[in-house]
Length: 204
Image (cartoon, rainbow, N blue to C red; front, side, top):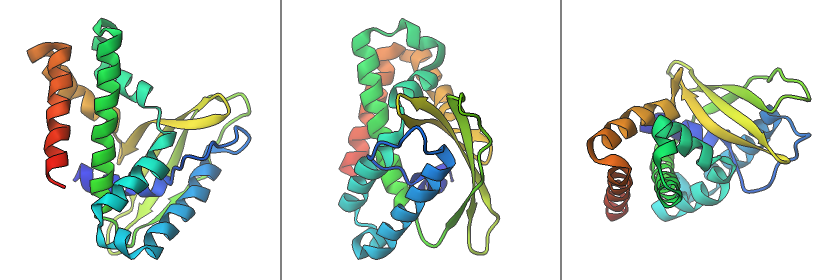
């Protein structure tokens, strides 16, 4: 269920590689880019038909660059992060990023006719972290709340967690990551992620 809902998180956050001005509010950024991404999918028959290569290209180039993968990985690994070497941290970040790209791109194939409502975000000029709240409207189904935890990084805003119907993406991974580390250490987690990514790649 999580993977299917992630299509909404991936598409409707509408992130792209353009650096957003710090003067542009996070909710305005989400709203503007949502329109662009939805239009791109509707206009491209290959994307609409689930062309995996195009979908992964869309996810990699236009959706994921606004995610702070360093912080996401650090939060997902939790207290074990401090015990990882610099090389292990890099391997974890790279492997987790690859996993999320594959997860998002696979989920994009589930996209049909959902729409999004982006709620105004209450914030001050001094805020460096905000939560952008959205509602996913599904034809014939209950709306799904999707919240994006975002932080100001220099002159841009980046997502470091996604809450789907109140469930944190980062926390969800933290539980399984901690179990793997307890069983076979940080290198074991790196290997586990690499194995999952290799298996996913073989299923293309």
